Image (cartoon, rainbow, N blue to C red; front, side):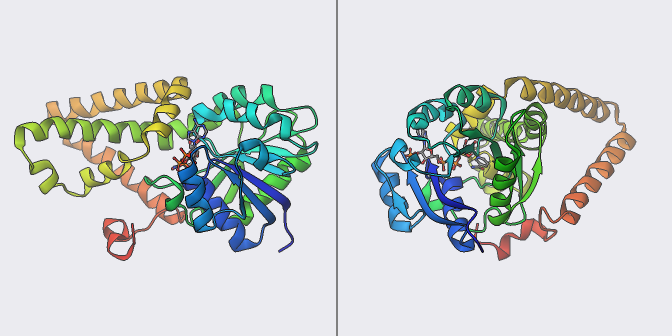
Length: 306
Ligand code: NAP
């Protein structure tokens, strides 16, 4: 494949950046990948695992001369990192990110993007509950969606190029407007995470009463919540601090639905529960038909590494 960019810089070298580095190398997408992370430990691990071709001592050094610079740090750190790399950016380069929230990243990054440099945001809808450089793997983005979120008036060629890049990493892509992105992600990702965190917290309170039974007898439903609730605390704190409006909107609707189900249980309205669960089962089937999850019992756990 002809390289899409000559040099790509990854700022932050955790799960997402590490997976991008490996996927770029797998596909021969670029000629050189530079990378930087704030701690020496992460930089050393990234070098040892060959996540990038050159690990640098500063974000500015990694960004210098790069055709694409991708910010792969927690959402709350995007603005400070953008300020740090700004003087090193070459004219015509593209700055992008992988943040889970878009409005706040736009507001934090845009003021630092110099004239003649393009900014095109992106969000790979792929991840695991693991974080750090050791957790990256080349297949993470295969057949997963990557949302491309260009600002109004973005350079069409820069947007096309970034979209081709993400397809080269294995993703399907779709373009989305910034506010719509934040609302969609609140529904499909942010609020579900909050609910999982809450349920595990509730069970933990209960465990104090019932000793080890919650852990010992944990059935699939609760176990799956614990997997989601093991996600990185920094990343998820930042998501809720920055996608406040959309999260609260969806959480409000969730609470209303929950009250309706609670009422059905109290009043013995089995038909309401049956109809509701029939409808939600069809949604699960739709996700499997779209190739976004496995139909194997127990999520194919027996056959999978993680
Ligand atoms: P991660 O594995 O925890 O890696 C984060 C990286 O950012 C690390 O290299 C870390 O450096 C660096 N970093 C952390 N705080 C920083 C700061 N204040 N200043 C500079 N660098 C900092 O996280 P990740 O899962 O790859 O997530 C990265 C981004 O991808 C986040 O914006 C997240 O919202 C987004 N995202 C995540 C997922 C997911 O499921 N994980 C999915 C889609 C998008 P050190 O290791 O040296 O501390």
